[in-house]
Amino acid sequence: MGHPSAARTDAPDPVIRTRALTKRYRGGQLAVDGLDLTVPAGSVFGFLGPNGSGKTTTIRMLMGLIEPTSGSARVLGHPMPRASRAVLPQVGALIEGPALYGFLSGRDNLLRYDAADPTADPRTRRARVAAALERVGLTAAAGKKAKAYSLGMKQRLGLAAALLQPRRLLVLDEPTNGLDPQGMREIRTLIRELAADGTTVFLSSHLLDEIEQVCSHAAVMAQGRLLTQGAVADLAARARGRLVVTTPDTADAARVLKEQGVGDVVTAEDQVSGDPPDRELAELTAALVAAGVRVRGFGVERASLEDAFVALTGEGFDVAG
Ligand SMILES: Nc1ncnc2c1ncn2[C@@H]1O[C@H](COP(=O)(O)OP(=O)(O)OP(=O)(O)O)[C@@H](O)[C@H]1O
Image (cartoon, rainbow, N blue to C red):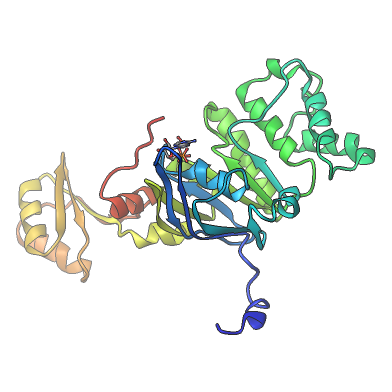
């Protein structure tokens, strides 16, 4: 610290960094509130939050589509929206569903899209379109009219449009929204492949399990504010797992666990669970056995990202919508 020129030679600059980024819409709605986001290079970064938590508003600010009310955003090291013209050609974006012409084939949609891009080389257009179609698995369907495409195929065509040029960053807003499980799997596989090629992927989602499946890093939003961010493994590990005792003697077990300092003891059928105390678990089993509790199972269940979310907010993750 204190030596900016030396700092530059350290870890690569984050691909996205925001400082106190805030957006208040004209109607007065505070959609994003003092957001400090850091997206490391090479990550698959999940931007997680229930509907209305400010994800799309943040993405629109990052892409220079709307001005922040206050605070700042840097993408690929440059300030947005000021450096949009330098930054956006290096960013592939899929926001609010791809804009497609239904009467054109998938291939012709991409040719047209590429022709509208002043930075795209017309001499390599056909080859780049063919490569992008191949990349998303649409080569066989390339001649079909886009209106005949399934939602999943349309979404893949949108991704192909984002991949017509080499990109350092892909920004995908709810890329699996509305897709059936098969379509979701296809998009997730594609995201993993793109990340393996070294592209940083920033994707928003309201699905916890999606983030756990594809992302290396995540940020959790609620009501416009950042609750936490970091490596997915660390986020889950930060939430302590639940101690679970399986026994026919649930009332006795619950009493003993409380006496032993276990918090938040909950009984459900033949199981009693609670927050594990900071002490030797063997002492707990000994106390249970000494009290005559028949212990059929005893262990600490690994915490999931959902546990971490619940621990942070004190409420469940709303996956509705
Ligand atoms: N153009 C707008 N004018 C006024 N308020 C808006 C506008 N766009 C979004 N909002 C409000 O800002 C808040 C955040 O919305 P935003 O779309 O960013 O959330 P989100 O997390 O992306 O949710 P979703 O997944 O539903 O898109 C919401 O309360 C929303 O109603």
